[in-house]
Length: 546
Ligand code: GLN
View (cartoon, rainbow, N blue to C red):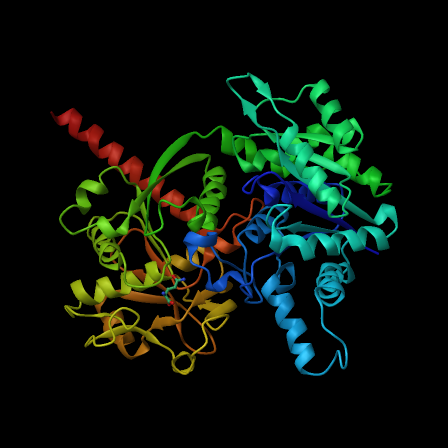
């Protein structure tokens, strides 16, 4: 039988519940337990797939094709185990299920209400992963305690806390202890209030995790414990960390895992095995080289929009013991005229995924520069599509070549919609989503990078390389080195006469974890190192001749 841990948040959003949940999960996993994490989000969208990145950051896609919250990315990166549709549930999905059941007559004669029908559906889904062989299921509740929309979720936790044996259910409440610089003091009052709010809703927290800029003294911990009705050892300090990957070690120091195990009455667990994790942190914290990579996108002011890409670079940097400095460059402001100036410092170029017309011409100029200047290039999804368009326009000479996403009247629709996609009217969950196999050509760059010819990667897009033009591209030197074995859809393109140019239709960033850094990112960082060294070598050679 699985045991359940619920993670709630108080005082403010953005305290990092996902990271705390993932860190706790990591510690429990490192002691030999089978752990999974799920996220319950109180908004009414059925899933975050229809949300603009400005609203909710990146949409993370699982192997089974679920469009989910970006916290699931953290869960996978920390635990190195895949999540699925079942790991992310929203209010919209709960209501959709209940309303569908009502229409089918399942509640015949009854008035359908928030309590018990909505809360029962929430509880059913909260317990579902408990039947899949996990020892511990951690549930993160999105939002902040006191929000109107999170009430049914908190009520479901209250009922579960009441129904389950005490040692099977635990509530961890994450709050903020602000530091007032004028008073030179840490303040516990917001935490007291948020715990009171949670208690008014009937939920008694077992552990309080406190986000803080300054260390918590024993006295402050005792004060929080007294007012929040927990023992002082159940008050955990969560100091700001240099990287999210240090948080599990901080939680270990604070004994979060030990108190959780004690409260859940789990005995006979092993000592934490965090050797690989510490090794990763050492390589990350003590780099021996440095590269600068340009990230070309249109959401660059937004940290969360390219979350998985940024994390994949952290993993790949650590493998290479190389500090990867990411320079965000807004695609809307790149032109053929200013690109050389903007890219002067770069050792590699990543053109990001995206939707819609805004900024695509800048992405095309960026690809052109990388192609013509031997700069290592990595295009993901829309980035790959832009590399195809750039090649069509500037090498094949098809001046108005485009994707029909941006120009339906183009004479050369080199990126086009698949037949199945043309009929689709509904937006939610209808893209080409989730894991698909891809066969790689022997001897290609992709083959060298992956070290195999059969891979599986996750997708999230509607448009595809148009195979009507395949031969023209091949003749002109753009190689389709990866294809879907069933449909023949082109998944990878590369260039014959370029040291490192690769575009992929899928999203490799979604599969990069601390333990399994993605080979495409690892190799791209190596290529950037090679470029930096060559550049440095050339400069040195030039200096000698002067
Ligand atoms: N807009 C493109 C498509 O739908 C690319 C999507 C993406 O980059 N994820 O095909």
